[in-house]
Image (cartoon, rainbow, N blue to C red; front, top):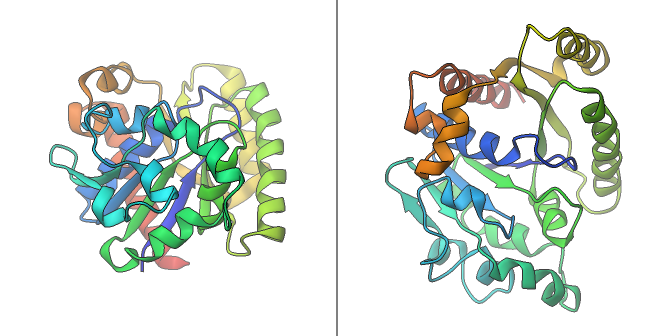
Amino acid sequence: MAKIFCVANQKGGVGKTTTTVNLAAGLAKVGQRVLMVDLDPQGNATMGSGVDKRSMELSVYDVLLESASVKEAAIFSEKCGYHVLGANRELAGAEVELVELERRDQRLKTALAAVDADYDFVLIDCPPSLSMLTLNGLCSAHGVIVPMQCEYFALEGLTDLVNTIKQVHANLNPDLQIIGLLRVMFDPRITLQQQVSDQLKAHFGDKVFDSVIPRNVRLAEAPSYGLPGVVFDPAARGSQAFVAFATEMVARINQM
């Protein structure tokens, strides 16, 4: 049975897409069968997984409108070692089209149920806004992985996200919970970051992952080559941190 996780944070620019593609590549590297679902119309996670969003015949848009199955629309990225259910600009139109449809917030959940036995992990890259697309992701997930920078405004955004997850848990998806908080773009030399990190651990305890992703130039360069950092430069500190995170993730899921 596949474990389905949203990578979500209502604050933009915190490294959601970087986290999603590198965790997917890290999980594939440690022997897991992975599907990465891109729910952001910008399609950055698709391009960052070595798939050209402009040449896709089928995308997550077709899956949400039930004109294609996940099996038909998913593309295997040879370089990255995982399947990609990609997104492009078409997906922006799905917002409007879904509003009038039945089960509009359950469509991704229904589609993923059909491939439950084919994967160990399904990772969903959500847009930063709480939209119908994000809601589809949250309704189909077992849990949420929250990447966050150790900065003051990130703490503010985290409060909003926790409230959103509570609402979805209460009304739409009783399985939904926060799996863990991942500290990203971390620089231990900055006192404020260390203080926020300590606050997170004090407040959330073991919900904070042990793995920490450092600020790393190679991770930032990788998307311009259409690859996750884990594949682009496996020896980089950031890449090794993501593989360690993938290992921790597998261990944590086995304990659940």
